[in-house]
Amino acid sequence: MIIQMLEDKDEIEFQRNLLAQDVGCVPSQINYVIQTRFTPERGYIIESRRGGGGGVRIRSVKTDSGTYPMHIVNAVGSRLSYRTAAVFVQNLLDYECITPREAHIILGAINDKVLPFPADIRDAVRAGIFKNMVASIVRRN
Image 1 (cartoon, rainbow, N blue to C red):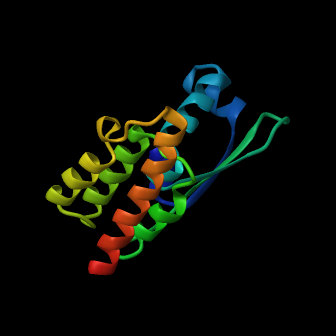
Image 2 (image 1 turned 135 degrees about the vertical axis):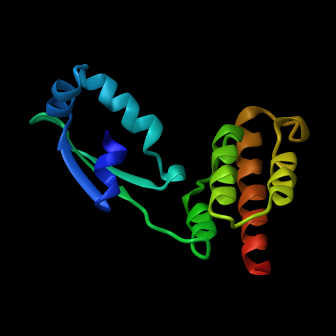
């Protein structure tokens, strides 16, 4: 339903409580959907207000295959889980920014098996490797 609302607009705003009533669920379920489906790695920016029914603004970040890789590089913080990286790689494939071969190389280079460090260090190393690989692909193209 939220995705359908975003099809016509780049930005929507709604009250969590009212949307929950419309779809027949509790507001916490709306929170869960927003937190898991509308993330920066999937191309969305969320602004949330507390109180008064919990206002939410969701903006779709419109990018193309030329600008999306740098959006990803900028969205990656100082740490990156493998799962989040895999979502980024899939998005790069969907935007045709990388080839399937490049996707396999990136995922192979940042896999937990090749980063034998404690989790916090592994995620920091993964973030650096991932950003450098994506930036290198962008420079190449």
